[in-house]
Length: 292
Length: 292
Image 1 (cartoon, rainbow over the protein chains, first blue to last red):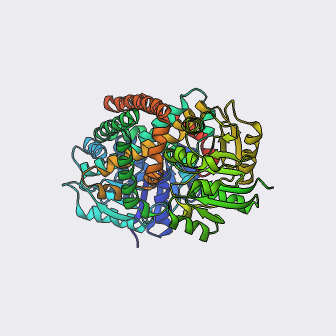
Image 2 (tube, rainbow over the protein chains, first blue to last red; image 1 turned 90 degrees about the vertical axis):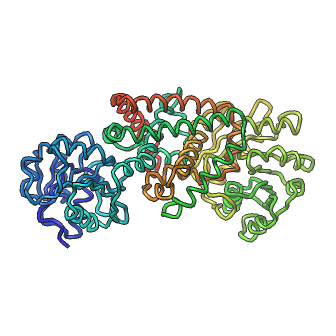
Image 3 (cartoon, rainbow over the protein chains, first blue to last red; image 1 turned 180 degrees about the horizontal axis):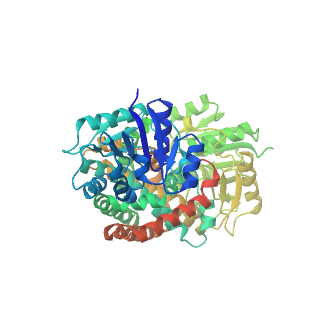
């Protein structure tokens, strides 16, 4: 099932590289052009067969492409889109993979003066704590959800093309309202990343922290896995989804204060009730979905 | 290598059951007697071959045993120890597996009026989010650390016997000062459990939480795995290690407040610096130890 004659992937990291690999494996695209700032990284992407050829200039990369995927960190979206804009083909559909959607839509509006009808904001809910093209693999999106957040201006035919692209990569595609997407992701992804980073940093600043980490067990390793994620990417996400993330953070701070107060007061009833509600919710909604 | 003629395991759950399985496999013990409150659970432990026979009365379980392991939740330690006390053999060495050590030592002092020289406080740093004898497996302690926290009164020969027991189960044994143990575990285990429970509970109380959980990815599953742990056990740990845990909680609350303020202020520099320190610390101290 062909979804593009020529696919341009701007940003050939874990997500962009894995998408290229998946579409290649599905024989869903003709040529794949990669784009990035680092020539050595791009050469590696070509060498690994992730892309057919590479460009460091976004305009050169998108020229002649009928499908363009923006897979750069959120903080680079606007500049890359602006650089690519003059060279975009008339029939090109453009989508992105950013973890926050309102900010990307604002970027598109800033570059084009409006939301182009061929621009489809998107977000694959997949990833690992690793990054870079070396970490890319074709199976990353299999059975994972991709959320598309078209706005009023978006052409349904463009949405359909992006949906077909993700389905060719093995993903399950849904559409969602922009603000709802950003709130849901703040809760399930952005807040947990904050907590994992904050915990590891708090421990790293304790006296004798090397010894302390030595006594961390498997639970700690799992809990903090996401703290090994790319700091620049997460810096960008925090700023891009600032409002929704801050709402969740403030809410969590209040909840944690209540729990700490219960520990201080020796209020076992509150502790037990909280732990029971949490275990019941996780076992009901998360546990059954593989991996424990 | 025989470490006991007769081993009494009080509390045949994940930890007690796994220890019994490991020592049996190592042919390190003669008879293994299990003890618990629930006859059906004990019958299952016998049926699974985890213990040779079972008693619901701690005194009956420890009679004639030369090695006794207290593997009940921290909140039950004092009552179980008191019930077993009159029947303890003169040559018996008693140890425990509690995740907080000062409270167990206080329990022993309360029961015996002093810290008996044959009582060796201990803590295997191993576990999973599952519980019960069905979850027990002989390999649980392999290459995991066990921390023993003997006090001034403890007989070095008793410490040596407990060390040999854990080594027979494949563990690496170290000794540590009581208060230091409780502070280290508050940081690496008790605080992360609080955060995971608090996060899942916070999300479970959001409107539309079933839908929200649906969009959680693998990072969320890993991060919240420990929130599927036994609520009663963790209730007990929080109360038993209240002071050290509270210290870490208050410290973390201050750190999180700084991070939330940085998000609110759009202070990308603080966010990036925090994430970089955390990633560097995790990659250096945790990542290399298997499982990412």
